[in-house]
Image 1 (tube, one colour):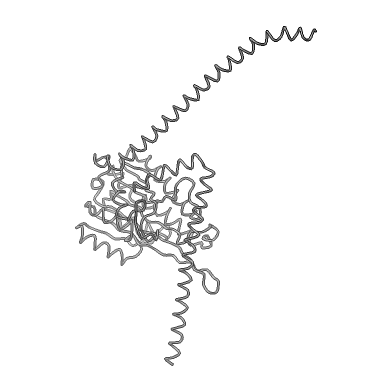
Image 2 (cartoon, helix red, strand yellow):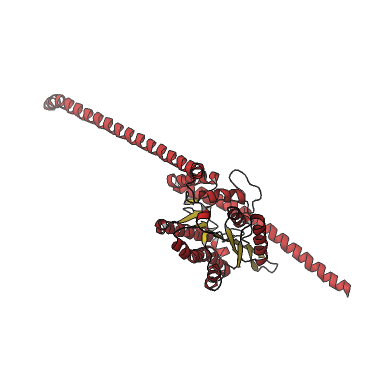
Length: 392
């Protein structure tokens, strides 16, 4: 009875209390729903704003800015342009006695992107300084440019894989007195066959050359031309990097990715330091281009020829600071960044697996070439041996 009385007294009291609680929860949920809706609308508008800004920037930097003349007129920067080159690559073959022989292959400044830059700068009326290791190819390229474009040329034979003293003794003195307005740091070194770090690092020369060519060269060449640019209050320095320098890097070309990241950091910081002095610094990070370095012969929408790439690259100076220059490859950059931002774990897993598959295929193909090279060498040695015996 007493318990029932309590229940009879408690239930009428509980009903309005529960009603207040339910009403409060409903209002709170309503407010939360409004807040969630507001946040959703804000994020959606923000996403559209970012996409619109990206599209507008791409349109302006690629076409509109060029039409309006907002990019840099390289002829106004100085009479001479310096083009360094080209690429030093490493391959290795396993000899019959199971020893590993490392082979360094040097692709001259007179090939691929370097040659395209030299030609198109000369076409704009600039005198050209060509710098590379092969004196024969330098002379051939210089003669072609002089005859075809009617400009002056100067060649400097230099091995960018050598020690830093090479610059004081050779490069700096030979550049003295030239009104250098444009520097294209195109020199670079890559793997012939990408692989794990512990395997490619067997060669101490490989590590030394990788750093000298990709880090020391770009730093010392910038140091060589910067004082003259500062005196005139104008100049352009373009450093040719790679997609491999993107945030997160590329597995199996680890050292190359690291040194190109240095180049990117150097370029972007120098751009901030010398913005008020009228000197433009640009970092170009192309993806694949049909060069000897990439071993890709056929171009398509995403992979340009050197001439196509350089044509867009020169137009982008003054408009784009860190760019692949080739428009389809520019589209890929935000996609990569969004993927890494939204799904960092899965993206890294997938990208690593894709890189591993691609590089393993490349390694298998290179090993087949190496074995074919060894087979032909053995056949040639055998033929020469029997030939010398028959002569006796």
